[in-house]
Image (cartoon, rainbow, N blue to C red; front, side, top):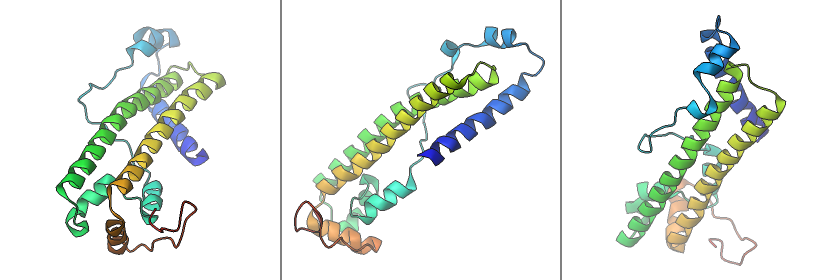
Length: 185
């Protein structure tokens, strides 16, 4: 979490430096007159947005037999998924993508606010704390949403399909877990 926050802050500072270099020679009053927080451009609702996947989360979830809907769909033939399962997984993936796009737009807006605050020399510790807290909260919601899709995908598959998934991906199912004696549940 700390590394992610530092990486986000470093990215913001890099962008801020670029914007600051572009505004050398302008007074802070001129910069503020040109843009305010309400002027922060937003992406149209139909614009594609890319929100990076935490590969470690995906790998750990899948290693423990919680496939992502998209992964299960990619190997649907090998898993012998029914048409109903395919439709269910496609809907899960679609719903997840839509929610992530909405949150991703909000995340991008907060990142731009942070960048703009540095560029306009309108920043202090409390503002950094507030903006990075909002960024972190949105990032956490996106991460939770993706991981919940792994839970739902697992529930859509049969125990035999999960064993086949493990075999195809080279994973060993856990011998037991706390919930019961079934290694798949």
